[in-house]
Image (tube, rainbow, N blue to C red; front, top):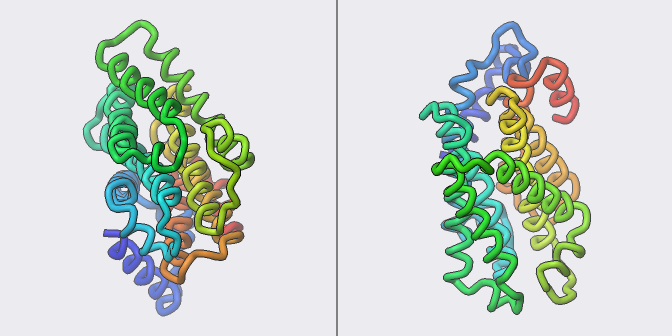
Length: 285
């Protein structure tokens, strides 16, 4: 499916060159023709579910696809966590735009993704193998399960719980991006010098989970669902741009995938937020 999207992108780029049309302007909401929101949300749903599932359940395959040479447990663990975030976004899109569920039920179902990731990590004994206490992971598992229970039981504290969890996890992921050593010490990691691949996937974990939190916080704040998705895409664009500008470990296919995701999410941000965002995205690309 990812390769299909890439082929579509190459095809559109070829039309730009051969026919002189401005497909990129259309994708960024700057042309006379706009992208159909339903097509864009459906594409986002499929892309997020496929990409997230591959990262979460087949991390080795995903790492090879992105050109990652380090196959250590540390990299696989953060690749799976990145996949859980992307899959959560995909499930939320599925619930909101296709199944037409309300926001509370959407959060209840999407929380099951992270519950699954936590259970899998504990079952695989990741924390013990890395010499780290699993208590942090267990706490997040309890929170995920509590989220699901509160959302489906219509508990009176549901909104406060969702606000608190999303805000705390957003702060957590900002620290992962800007102060990774602080987070590492919090979880009990021993002092370690990270190589390029490990830095890339730790940063990916932070950015994609921050994007998930931005999507959730926007919905909780009452922002319209499409615009909330656009705000989420801004964070993903920042992630891809950051990685492309700093990573030395990405292979040719990985770099191409990153550039494609920039186009894809820039289109989402531009079409769902405003034309001004479209111009901003065009300047980045």
